[in-house]
Image (cartoon, rainbow, N blue to C red; front, side, top):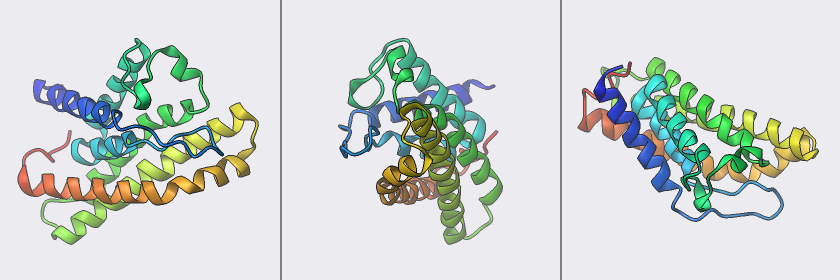
Length: 187
């Protein structure tokens, strides 16, 4: 891994942490808050690719595990990995990887801007919504005893916001392709 790769992963680690400074919104009927950090996870995958995006997310989780308040609401420490939301945190790793891998496969420099944007959007939906929900809902259902159907129905309220995050991640990915043409050479 090159120094450049580590610097980019660290940059996106910082972006994900900064997105955690936005206060979480709790809905009350499910113990999972709405946060902006999943946008950072999607964007890391889209911009950095599977390998570097996953490293950025792993760094955030490592910082949280050692006790730094890097998660939304100023949370940190090993206790965050024993909460009903732990499945979503674990899912961040898979979400960044799948989003990055899908964007590597779907988006090419020679495509039109529209096709690049659509590719980034599909990658963000696939990794940042479908994969993330698979981990989060499954863990939530098992730990809380809600059952899969109730855990999924409780999570449906988050889908419109996560689709909006996927649109934003796609726009960022497209902007990076235009503004920094060498950066998307994901490894």
